Image 1 (tube, rainbow, N blue to C red):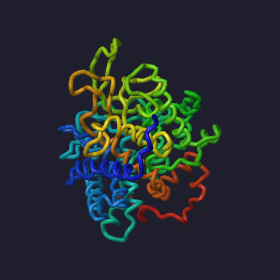
Image 2: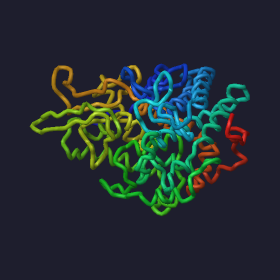
Image 3: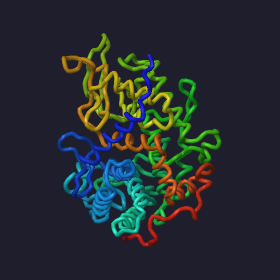
Length: 449
């Protein structure tokens, strides 16, 4: 039986509850947002970028006052502008990029994590969202625009190429550049857009075609699409950029756009759950969403006579896996703009079949109906906490679906438009956007505030 689609009131409630993660878990003294709600969790710079964008949406939806959002945003931007930038192993960043995880109290590098180019791109996208939104002539909002632009200008994208055409995944002071590069279709679409547009240290002109030459197309369940297994890859760049009707050379040759590609990827996920080739419990047309998420492992269990191995946090994907029966509701929510006709019934199914999965900040990270055993696991395993990487896309994609506000806002950002143009995008709203109809984030041409 097909559940009714989640109604607009419930969707609005889910968005507001999810926004509470950024409202309540952030360190108000420096803007650090924890990667997750587990005790002792470090901050994630991607979650900080999502938080900065969420504040903008929160003001528009009445979840937070403009004054409080301004204060939170300024605290964050001031911290990053004044943070330690250098080769020392406990700095916050280097060359305008930042370490993936930072200590919640000091904002300095946690563990021996990498200086992450992709997570820095998400952070910068959040900063540019704030710069575009806070457009009033007050001292505080002018400072937001000035700092955001200065931070964007500081990122040395050319350095991040390390002499190659594509962009490296990152760098460590102990060992230098990471060998892996952003090759093959991935969430790095926004990274290349921001890097190409840089007015100070841009990516080389051949970086984007070098990247797209590594794409792989496939056909699954009747859907021909640009392949990536985890669903988040088809979503994260779309948080800020409306790809409807705009095409680069690759998509022009295929006669679709990246939005349509993500729609097809969403349907592939649903069809995979319907076919359920590995025979996991719970999978059906209304229960799908395989992506990067928390999991019940590492553990092995015999379930229904089959020896199963369960992962912990990993990037799950279809059809080649890993797939251990773990479903992430946020993956379905983040596909809402692409395919609401299958997403909204799925969200209602999650509510009806797994009410225990919803708590103070909306949907928890993930659940696994196959991982059973013991009184507390009668319906399977449910993640105990929340992750900032899940919460941000929920807030942002619900808004993009309901109002398109964030997409319109970022469509005015000159760096987004410039990066798209340099990547060869044309058509749609991008063709209609003119310099005379937009304003820069700041009038300053200096790289310092």
